[in-house]
Length: 68
Image (cartoon, rainbow, N blue to C red; front, side):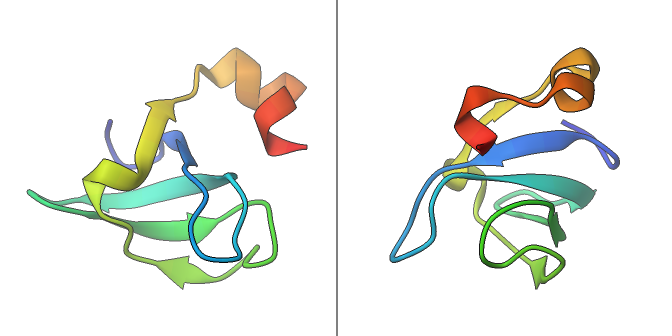
């Protein structure tokens, strides 16, 4: 995971799984912007434990079942 990566964030509270673009990676969290879901376009700082996986660039171009 590095700046520019697209990751899948697990569901929490009333927010479903969603795609997130990483801006910075820290020891315990990442920063960036939600790309899908009800918080699309919003800045966030999810903990690393919230990241399900890093998406392959081809998946991002095609979309994934998890993001729909």
